[in-house]
Image 1 (cartoon, one colour):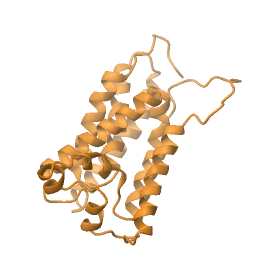
Image 2 (tube, rainbow, N blue to C red):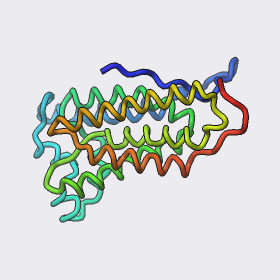
Image 3 (cartoon, rainbow, N blue to C red):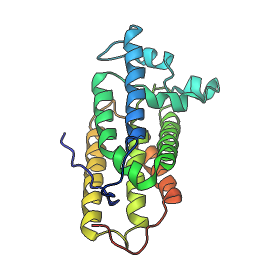
Length: 218
């Protein structure tokens, strides 16, 4: 699937020195996910298709353990686990696309809050809808970032250039629509986690975003 890069709504400051990467949080989140996956593979878990038991043993979201045994930490750890190289590869590519936008628009601390709350929201909805299936993946958190994009556009619709707003909304909308359609025709995609993350990210984003002033950003 081809993805259209989301434009940057925050003007760059020319000539300003940069002591550190402007996208450190995005790169760190990607690194953590990759390192966890590498550790799973190194321990003997399949590189292509880990079993549900393998993922559950590593902290996957599974109703009898998450809820029944009160292992609530699984709601978070499951967000850093993946069912194979294709699963993590797709999720990390999408995070690489959307992460920098959120990092600039919200700032690092708010970015992390959106990411983790959306991940938890997606995991909660997933374990409620599918209590006897093992859930894992960063997609709930990533959908939350897209939810935050919609919140950002809604709160700042009067200060952003309409062309920029339309471009961002189109890119985000295509991503969400594609995944809803694709998820509807596959048995392994957990749409409940996606929707849970999307709604959580939208709500948290609306609460955290600081409305911009009346000037338009080209």
